[in-house]
Length: 629
Image (tube, rainbow, N blue to C red; front, side):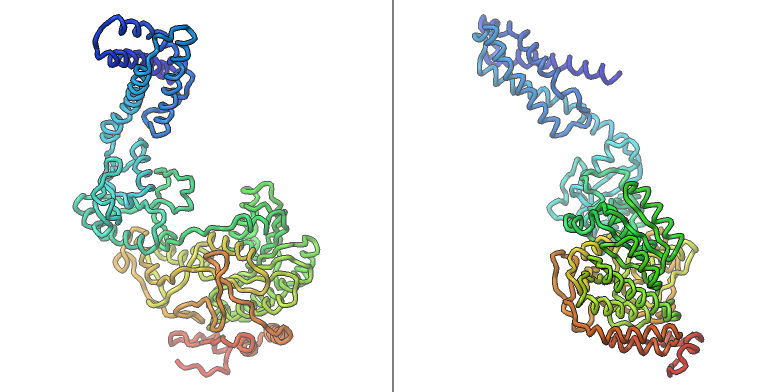
């Protein structure tokens, strides 16, 4: 039967309900006693049916799909029935039939018709829920973790979706008030502590985590219990991905490492960022890297006048330019192959494009690699930053934001020391410059190029072993989008010379991260995939810090950003040390580089004891060092 035919059939049934309701109201008014008075009112039934039929026909009642009837449909019935009941007395008066109007019959008719209409609309849905849907639930036996709004919406979606292959047997929720209750006919069986036992007793095959606001440690605990019961698990995305409020079966996904960290989405001051970036000429260095490319994606959302994408690596620059061009066709993009160490090249670029805002994300970041290549760390991370900052000052750039790292705090490696030296350079320049120089310091980002997560995934894919430096190593982590968004926010807050520190949450043990990643791959640590310990690599620390002793940390207007009060740095002395450091790098003087970094960064304490093994390259580089093995 076509949709139009079905609607006409429903309309005809409604006409029967209208006539039946009116006759019943008349009968009730006269106590079901047949007399001339009752017969007189019954004669007006044709007028009532015609009037109400016209109102019903032009209402929105016949545009709804009643097998999905909801509160809004009930409200529509209320409005239509009320309007139709109000129209009838006026028509009777116009036709001089007012003697046939009775307030008692009016109210009785309104109430009876409301009940009949509601019942008729809900009848098919009730039938469908009880008989049609329940008989179709033949998929794997499934529990939903979380009997809140997300869990309820998910259950509804599964019930009405013919392709949803889940047979929901119950909910699990830690809220004592919900336990034992029914949610859309499905019982809340207990809290998550009972998950393993429930899964075994009910032969559960799948678990869906439907707690968008869950913390990482809670998700890790749930996954561990699922693993103990040999149950597969999936998860709904976080709050940031459910902003529409509608949960769909297609949103159910495998648990990823981001979910285990449980980082809440950053809430940004969009207006401030828009004022900061909209219509501005923006330059991003390191635009082809993990952080730089994501900063470009975030900037593009705020409609800048143009983005100059600067990187020395051709292929990554090609890919990010092509991606942004496809996503933002109206945006002016300028991909520039250049090296921040080339001062002359930078000057010509600034003359041509006159950037107003600069995000400096270009840096060498791999700690062991920079230990073996200190010259490159100095020339790129320090000299490159100095070049870019000096030219930005000269050309009157409004805002300059440099990306730093937690490894710059009490550094034990060349990379960290070079980034701390770059911070000092920026702070010294900020004292006299009209440019607002800002530094943003944060820890590791998940999934960035060369980070631990992609390495673990590759090792698991190859059958192991997964290599961890030390069982006690911990690191701070955040996601690439979150870090990039907070960098933009910090750029708005900067007044010149500050170092902003992002809230990295709790540090995560790397060993625990490796174990969870193995479990997410459907394997068991130490059984299917072994974990081996290799010892700390050159320059690595057991834990990272975000603050240097003596730095005063203050809150900002954003809950996830703290600021270190600007420190007075003698610019002349700083410039002299930077000049000497550059000369040592040009001369490939490793001893001079180390000594220069120690003078510039007093808290730098290098260590060259590599778990009992000293690489020959280091012996050649540092013959002056007395290294104990």
